[in-house]
Length: 253
Figure 1 (cartoon, one colour):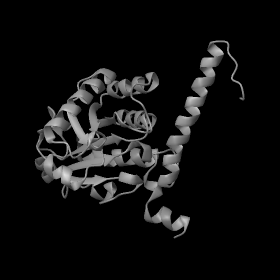
Figure 2: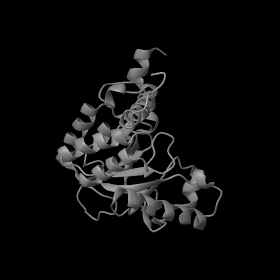
Figure 3: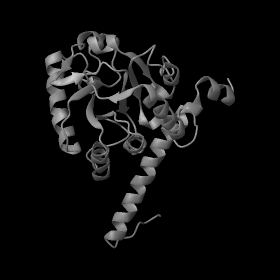
Figure 4: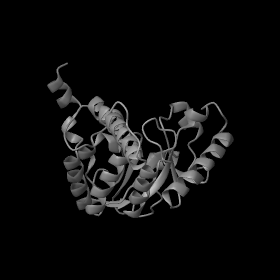
């Protein structure tokens, strides 16, 4: 398949900042932007962002949403290979996202702890992560999503609450909402734009990942490379800045 065919099939043009802003403008005509746990009977959309790769992108998307009057929930990983929540710059960004009016949730990776562990042990680990994330974000963490959940895990952990938090994979919530996801950089089920009709879908649960929504249209792999290269360049720049600050040489630069 050619590059052009891939771009058309996987809708690269959908995943830009401009396209996301357009989706929000369309959505706000017929929907309320609500948080998990809402009891409204009006048509509404739950905007959920699982931040797998880029807190920088998360902050950018959060800013776009705030500018258009939308609120959403950002779920952060403590075991990402792409970012570290304990880095000062990253922690500041998480707090800025919360300050924009968005909710902060835990993106919990059962596989890190051993997905064969019992539910009680996984819940204990999740409570520890919740405490750490709340400390980093400076706000309460009331909701959890699972990272890369396998069907067998969802069958076991499908109660409304997990580790004292609302479970976005709870069976009741999943049954009540029309769901769509951009996992892996393309629409895996339905295209969000095609679902934005409150008469047909009065309750929507839209999962997006901020790293996929970039300034210009790119392939999913190019977007992943963008995250990797950006982290590399920032790390090198920070190292060079530390040396300059301490009056040391950056040998080989």
